[in-house]
Amino acid sequence: MKNSLTDLFIKNITKPGRYTDSETKGLNLQVKPSLQKYWALRYLYNGKRHDLSIGSYPEISLKEARKRAIAARNQLNQGTNPKTPKERPLAPAKQESSLPTFSEYAVACHELKRLEWANEKHSSQWINTLRDYAFPIIGDLPINEVDTDHILQILEPIWVKKTETASRLRARIEWVLASATTRKMRSGFNPALWRGHLETILQKPSKVTPVQHHKALPYKEIPEFIKELKEYDSVTAVALEFLILNANRTGEVIFGLRDEVSDGVWIIPAERMKARREHRVPLCNRSLELLEIARSKDLKSIYLFSNNEKPLNNVAMANLAKKITPGITVHGFRSAFRDWVAEETDHFPEVAEKALAHTVANQVEAAYRRGDLLERRKKLAIDWESYCQTGSWGNVIKLLEQKAA
Image (cartoon, rainbow, N blue to C red; front, side, top):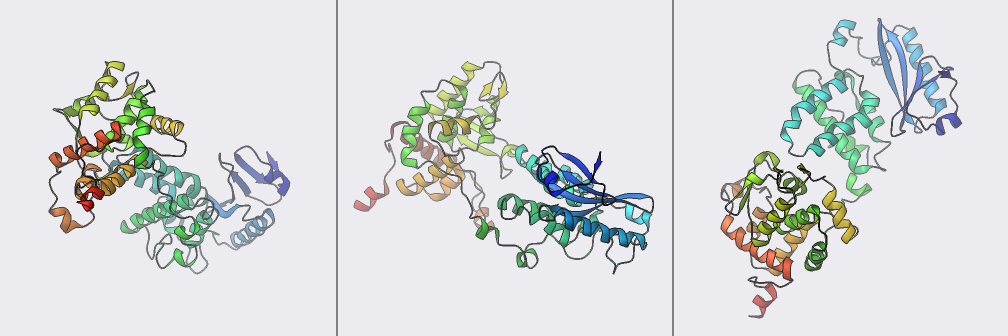
């Protein structure tokens, strides 16, 4: 239904959809499911329909949107496509349609890149941020027409409010445009480039919103946490204790398979590891006991920890951890483990790094670390298990005691 839009009406919109302004021909307000609002001018040129992005609301007011729409209409009446900069000759219609739109090419890029990612959640976030923020502005633009003004229209509304999301979004747009340039669908500089370009216009992300690290439970509180954890008779509690004892990531545990465990060693295949390398985990007595408890709760499942033969929900352990100690994260247990190794033991740092399956950044150093230090990591795992279960150090030689000696 066409209506003459008003500021009050726009402000009170609660349903997503396309709202047409009858006062200005072709001017529409696109409202996303998130209720974010974007202006677009719909028009025909050379028999083909176009949607010209005018900006987001409220950054671009109704009055300003109408002005921009009228200016674009004037260009159209003079025979110029409003999407095409005046200084560049208008490409023939056939040539223009031969290139994919930004959304089409971005989806194709996502299909290509998703094979690299072990984490399906990350894969979904990668394309969803583009759908939510970039596609409404540049989705219908041919890939070679995206410029700096478009990038700023996308980023500026969320740069301060959602800095981390905006920063990741910028990098994803940059990657898509760089790929298009490599395939000779674009030429010139990348308008989403940060260094030497957008950094001169937008605030540095770390200055707007300081980096937030995963909140970790201090390692000295781990034994008490596990003591409380054991009071919960659930597969989730068993899985979380197993994760803590082996310093794993959530995805490694919830998708772990029973046939991956043999002779006290759990072998996680490369495709489920963040670094895309097979990771062997030496399992100590309590870890093996936890696997048996989980098996008894779901005999038919193929997973180490399951609920009705299905893997645990990826937020189940996080919710339980927060129930016991509000504010902490599951990933933070890895930090607690690393802090304990550094502050309380004489185990070598590289053994801890191998236990965490961290990638060695220095390529020369990495060349000398081809082994996975399994036997040393098993000793470390025994000490960590002893500490987690009893609060005592077991075989660990405390650094303070070393200094005293």
